[in-house]
Image (tube, rainbow, N blue to C red; front, side):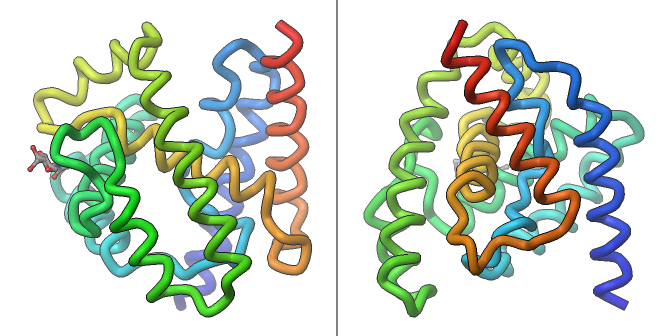
Length: 195
Ligand SMILES: *[C@@H]1O[C@H](CO)[C@@H](O)[C@H](O)[C@H]1NC(C)=O
């Protein structure tokens, strides 16, 4: 049963990615895997906190359009990082020592641990830098009534992107949709670097 839903989910995601493809603009990284899910890379298991937060926020934000879905995803991200203690009290930075402890307990492989930690450090900085972007500010306003802050969602989006781009070859899902997303992200990066 789970795997059927999983496949449906991946198909839905792929369609979404394809639909977003033409938008190779300044903010293209946000149009890609906006599912916040590193489904293309088997580096670590989904945390139980993430699943709990998903069902919790599904009940709170019963979305019927993309805009509300985005709010749902950002609140789910904050809820997850709250319950894992990854989010610092100011809600604009990560508790990197908690992240490291968690990775040490969770991952058997020191190389994977080092890679993920490096990505968390990068995404922590990256997300902070994006808070002043006008689209993010607009999103922040829409999140206020739900009691959510955009920072954790930006971190999660960044994590997903980085994991798709930097996934060790043997852990990368060799499916059509994962290749499409990866190609899209590579183009997007080139685009933003050259402008
Ligand atoms: C996360 O924790 C902060 C601080 O306690 C709280 O203000 C915020 O509403 C929480 N966010 C979510 C989505 O639960």
